[in-house]
Image 1 (spheres, one colour):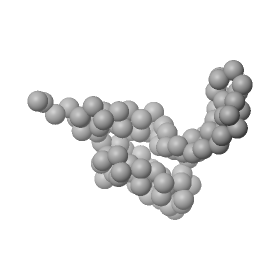
Image 2: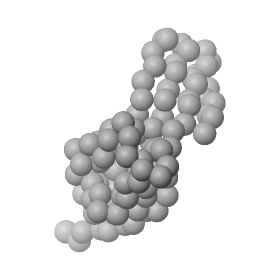
Image 3: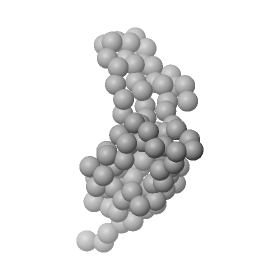
Length: 101
């Protein structure tokens, strides 16, 4: 079997999701490049993520989840200069999402 390799460069952040239908609020790791790398890894490929996260609680959560997923974090830089990015996601009663970055 040929090993597939991809590299993705861009944001990795925390989605703070409020679901108005259930009243449940939760936080998940998000960002299209990170999601792409995660899916590639799950399909048996090798994925390299190039990004930056803060030296904060959100950055710690992201780092832990990436490692647990088996993703290469060599090029995910930690910085104290900027906080980890977040996006507020609200799912309304119809199931439609709105985003505030």
